[in-house]
Amino acid sequence: MNQFDAPALSPADPDANTTDLLIGRLAEAPDAVLFSTPTKDGGWSPITTREFHAQVVALAKGFVAAGIQPGDKVGLMSKTRYEWTLVDFAMWFAGGVLVPVYETSSPSQIRWNLSDSGAISLIVETADNFARFDEVHPELPLIQNVWQIDLGDLDKLVAQGVDVPDAEIERRRNLAVGSDIATLIYTSGSTGKPRGCVLTHSNFVETSRNARLGLGEVLEDASTLLFITTAHVFARLIAVLSVHAGVNVGHQPDTRFLLPSMESFKPTFLLAVPRVFEKVYNVSEQKAETGGKGKIFRAAADVAIAHSKALEEGTKIPLGMKIKFAVYDKLVFSKLRTALGGRVKYAVSGSAPLGARLGHFYHSLGITILEGYGLTETTAPATVNRPAKSKIGTVGPALPGVSIRIEEDGEILVKGVNVFEGYWKNPEATDAALKDGWLHTGDIGALDADGFLTITGRKKEIIVTAGGKNVAPAALEDPIRANPLVGQVIVVGDRRPFISALVTLDPEMLPVWLNNAGEDAAMTVTEAAVNPVVIAEIQRAIDVANENVSRAESIRKFQVLAIDLTEESGHLTPKLSIKRNVILADFADVIDEMYAGAPATTGISLAG
Image 1 (cartoon, rainbow, N blue to C red):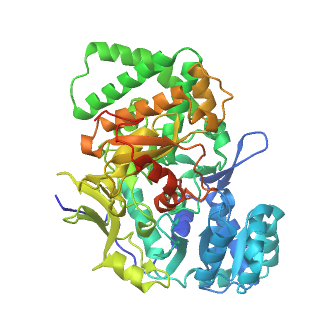
Image 2: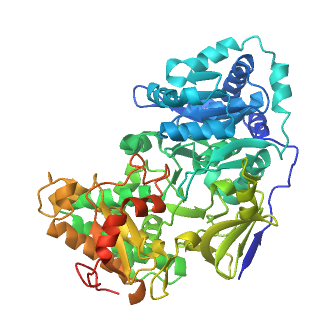
Image 3: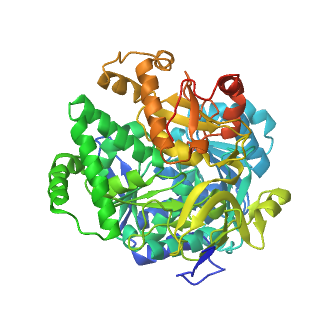
């Protein structure tokens, strides 16, 4: 199959804009809880749809009083919190266009987003956010106002707008039609300078309406705890969809407090990137190892995966497996479910491949991970697995209202209600990406007979060895990264005689792993990078990955780096994707050294 079309479940409404989603929710269930905000005693305070709407209108009046005109661009730099979505809808009600800025952005990144977009005001969360903006403020003459959430400036805006009539807000919120710009979201810059993606009101409205119908029971009587950044399109779309579908949303931006927050909030579904699911698994495994129950945990995981595979294939579960599963469910799985709040039935995973092993593991916990695929240019989802239509290891079929096509070279093309209008002030890039309405994603994949998409790599990241072998890095990197000791892995070898890899250690897991391995837990990352026991474990992880590829595609050498690759170091995007081009440039000497006169069997993997 080279094309799959999913008919829209919601009739198109070209006159609708994002504010209609909140107005519709207000009419449907005005007194239902729409948000919950954290209290000082660790509890949650409910906010109904009626209360949220009143706060949105009041803040919109403040923006109007402050001089925001319809079509004005306003930057927002804040971590995930209730106020993010409040500002988002208030700006739409005032007729403005929000330009998200990652809260971790550097001064130069802030300057680019605000200057390129033509933003005339900025909302920041903290004094630190303001300080970074202030470094480049002289280079941003268009910025008229800067409001800081932590200083209570949103309340001040509300007070400023008390004399603005309701009729003015109603007039403004009705100005935009579906084809008008709703937001300008800048790409994370993993392949160069960030480009502004023009997402329309129809992109959000039609994607939300079709997603609500397509995801069905996931969103019924549901609650979710958002912890990934709302500046990213993935969480942004879920936040808007939750308003439309009436999902009770809580926020916890600090992942250090994620588990306690989940225990108290008790969400029914989660939104996360694969690294979060890997972390939960790895922390659980190492905790079991510390308590002398590592073998039990790994045995339980093997049974869980086998049990899930048998269920998916529809084969009869052997009695012995049923008994083992029941025992492990009580000893291991029930504790993990409790740690996640006890009510999680679904988890939506995106931004990178999850891997079938983890998908099957969580499935046996009673948590169906609905892996999906999309880009900023597709308003987040293009494909997603559904409760009644799911295949572990794939990213699902097309979302209703979306078509997926596979070109002869394997590139994935997307067309539909979710596809953006183009890149802001960049017609050349727009023409290269959009052809006859089809978005050329740059990703490589395949559709099965049922229309389920599998991602195999990035077109621009395909490595061609000196021997002419095409290698997709993700097929090697993803299983290696699943090892608890590994932070990041970057496969290299373009125009080289064989495949190699750069590996970093996970600084959080390192001391736990070292302790469980009988090594000095106080060992630094620099010391660990050359420790024989650590090297042997990395070797084992690479050997496992090599078992899935041919010898010509397998990793022959690797180098453990003595540093961590982070967003702050400039090597990861805010959604924790690697900036491959930056890493290849920064570690060119290390890469050259791996190939400098040494045979392909030095220090290294021989499996595969």
